[in-house]
Length: 411
Ligand code: DI6
Ligand code: FE
Image (cartoon, rainbow, N blue to C red; front, side, top):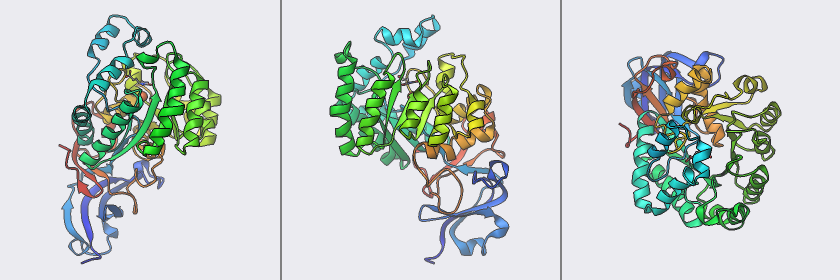
């Protein structure tokens, strides 16, 4: 009995994404077995090494449903307090994102709300959003700080992010984004704030173990390339990998800067030039597409998808869930937008929320359905993987499994 698998799912259409040369790594009439939280079998039913009930303690039929790896949202700002619906209205009346930021609104208004919230209140507000993502198939989530902008509140955000992982039993990777905006108490003293981030905040956060990576917002309305470089040098000195909000609103050479530091990813990239893309390819950095922000800001410059393809840069897709530029509570919707707005293929979009998203987080143990990978998977009310990108809205996930267990917080 000790040898037996914990679970076996029969009669599924497996989108393994395991790179076997077949689109989506599709296996029809497939079976998926798992034990101790890891996949032990992902292959055609005909290859099962014995009778199902002799192989596993629990056997279920997926009744021909599509099964994919759990989705991975590799770029979110999910922990925050309040909302910015009023700013949405201002933008509809003609104000730009940059106008609002310059007038002291934007990110800074979320900072005020996030600082005022207690840790438990922040957790409660953020958990609602995390449950929504989980219910539609997200089993691993990256969460950035960046609305605290002082040691106490950045730490509070990162603790809340970790508590979300504990509470829902899902994978959470945390990213320190102290260089997101200049807080009001440093208004007009941006370089002093960069000192604060590099000399005081980042070392303490690195020491606390609360951050898995470091990010910065490199933009003409945020931090300059040389300030970003200081943050990255500090991250490197503390052994933390970096990511970058790069070239979202203008070409800052952000992609090349990220690549120089061997970044896990550079994200947004609407204005990235070809030299930056070549540097990312050489560094193996993932390009994270964030169509929710593109859509919300009514951006018209498309990210150079074809150039990324030509250079063989891996493309990921994420929600960028945040209260300002991407109040997007669905990773599947981001996949839909990546196809419709950016002309990515459904297979690229699904690779972008599984295999490539895992890579953007430095995780090698998830993102495909293959022996040895974590048993994070989703049974969908769908029969073909393209449907995950095709349907707009709705809730398609039938059952979500994390580490071989039915996710408690999911619908
Ligand atoms: N780029 C973005 O799109 C978000 N942060 C960033 O650096 C926006 C965050 C916000 O507006 O609250
Ligand atoms: Fe972002």
